Amino acid sequence: MRTETSDEALAEAAGQGDRAAFATLLDRHYDRLFRLCWRLTGSEATAEDLAQDICLKLPRALRSFRREARFTTWLYRIALNAVRDDARKAVTRAKALEGLAREPVAPPDDGEVKSRWLNQAMSRLKPDLAETVALIVGEELTQAEAAEALGIAPGSVAWRMSEAKKALKILAAEDGI
Image: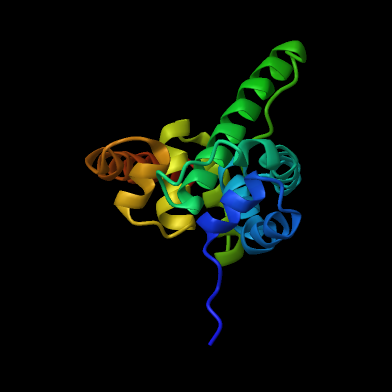
């Protein structure tokens, strides 16, 4: 009977230069990493760029992995930081290109479009609320797991989800949903 090597053991080995362990981690988690970036940015292209950038920087980052958290929790934190950094850069780029108007969000008219609306609406939430929704709803983490990834108390996760629901209801009303 063969047991599967844990993510944590693979991360430790990859941090020490084991390429096969690194490849296994990427194989297991690339889609999860991309999905979280996509939910937080609302852009498939940006999510792909971010996920690839994270993968390029991951070998060096793995040297600091200390098993204090599950590998997936640690990886979520890396992704959240990458999305936040990209958002800061986007603000700087936007200021440099000031004068260009932001594209308005079109209200949805069917189920697929409503899903797209939700992703766009999430980009209009405060970043801390969007991150929390992406982890709880998109990645189906428990409040405790999301709290660990975000570095906050579980009660704060519950509060953020409540605030996000209120904000999304307001946005839906504004967009005629």
